[in-house]
Length: 265
Image 1: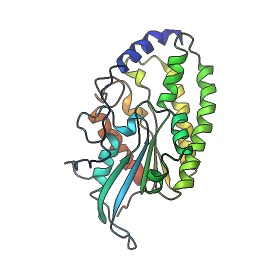
Image 2: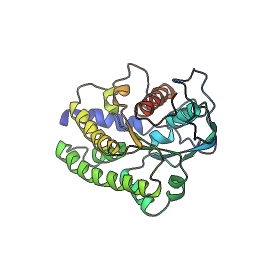
Image 3: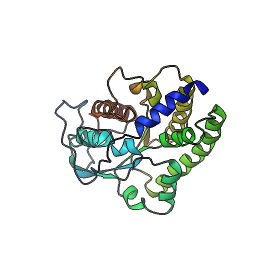
């Protein structure tokens, strides 16, 4: 792990220059001009409605890095859902915040701060875990080892399971999109295999939990952010740019169809 210290220090310095927080919860994203990824029709018993999407978690759900100010992946998915037959409109309730960790999200849920937003949701999306990994990196910067991440992963798994259970206690039926995390250090080097293993372990925790719920869908995104061959990073070299969020939204819509969470003809 010692060989990655310079990489981490450089990356943390880059991250410190991240762009300002975007607040798009009160503004609907403009519909995208591209053709819809797939066509949708409404079930016979479906009543036209205004759909509410509640986004939970960290900067990826918040949309940090989106130069087009379309609300990150959340706004783009909302724009696509808005085109579905039988949908009157889509409102976004974005509770996500840059830097949020799983312990902080859990505390908010337990204190009832998110009860209303979760209860009223027709769709839920969640990104959490990336800042848990970064906390270990910052804490043990000069003595990094895989054991520290393994110990933290046990705690993360317990917190994630508690978060998930609490969300389902509040809203048992809304389809839930669980976003995976990616390894931003691949932007600088492809030699840090240890971090690929760490990210894969966190993703596996989320994937297994989502697969236990027929109304949930895990969305892997790590392959979209390997290096920068697709030019998907924001200028802070950590968050997605608009193209990165485009790819995330496309992946989400594909997975929603595969998981049976879309109104598909």
